[in-house]
Length: 254
Image (spheres, one colour):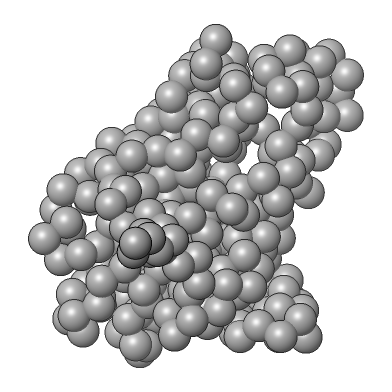
């Protein structure tokens, strides 16, 4: 009897780019891909952080390089991809948030959140895909969305707008790129404890309100997202495109 073979969760011989990779979620996902054998490029605006991250990955036996890149600079993005072989995997992770009631949102707030979370993500993906198409490379686009791309939240009008946009954008990407063997999906986390979010949880009332919604009863960690990214990056998810992997501890199930 011939048994089916489990698809590989390895990424040997593949090249991956992670944006916003200096710390937090981005760094963790870069580590996950490197652990699986990918050659990972960590991109961010802060050289010291990505160089430290890439160095730590190399010390652990992985293959990694640091690349300074402002993803909101379209000319810099184009130049970055034009000078490199195509990537097989893109993790579109760079993003920001300005939580405040919708009535207090200013135009500068809107531009800061939507320009980075949506516009930059779109054009990074486009530049990556154009290089993939030019070199005949199939692969996986992974966009870091949020549970707030599936529900609403107080003080999150801009963030919700941007993350709902990412969900629609990724679905449309999946349809455009399926004939070329390029998949597009999102990971939609709940609140993950990172250097960026940690100050918010110093407010006991806010932390209690979040934990009341997360049915598994704890905040997320970056490790909770590493397996999700690995799944979407590898052949284990070869038939998965145009969808969202919601890692929210049950938040959106209620």
